[in-house]
Amino acid sequence: MIIPFQIPVGDTLVIRGDIHAPEADGRKQPLLLFCHGFKGFKDWGCFPYAAEAWARRGIATIRFNFSCNGVGESLTQFDELEKFAVNTYARELADLAALVNWISEHSLPIPGNIDKSQLFIAGHSKGGGDTILFGAGHPQVKGVITWNGIADVNLFDDTLRKEIAENGVGYIPNARTGQMMPISRAVIDDVDRNREAYDLVAKVAQMEQPLLIVQGKKDAQRLVKGAERLHAAARNSRLHWIADGDHTWNTKHPFAGTTPQLEEAIEVTARFIHEHAG
Image 1: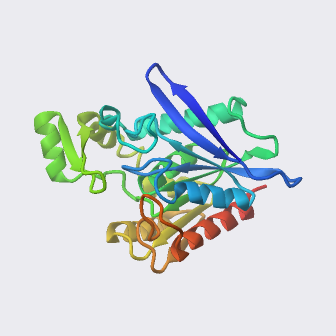
Image 2: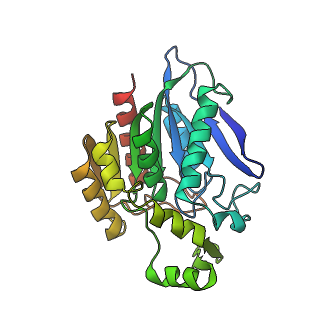
């Protein structure tokens, strides 16, 4: 069962999402929030398939769009680039807080067989950074999972920073759509002003919840090395390598079918959640 929802955030922003609810089997089932990454969205490629796979394994899953990810009512097109331009980590963490509040206040249509107190959070790429930042500050989260996640929130090189400093906005290409996607000074300022608060390595060193790091060996070396740094620093982590996995588990958008790498990532994530769910 897939249940769509919308959460208004302020006057102009909306979090759009889908709840993948498992069939009732007489047991209370844990709940997983899944965060997309940079230039990502809830309906990208393998994400709906993964959510359905977890639901079949008895894990209710919510996939959602951050309110300023640049994808509007179309759900699959970057048709709100003015919002993408101002999408900060602060905004994404506020979105997560709003989503969790709606869950705890029974404002989302979550079936009664789901145990909302057994809350886990996972994220792909930049979304992995969000999961660490949010999980570290919210002890009600029972476990944190990163899929090819970042270890440093600064994703912006000196060339882009110079362009933004001179013009107030810089542009990065979206190789898939051909769009030039804007990044405003607000995004850079958020990273620079909160460097200590957004230190992912320091966060995992302080975080008491278990952390699962799922990392493809064929991903970018920056992320491979970052996974090792996070694992070395974390109090309670498990680093699972996927030998032939690239950044998206060898899948594409539009989704053309599963891969052994995706199936492995789904399965190890499900085992981790069931292991740590109360």
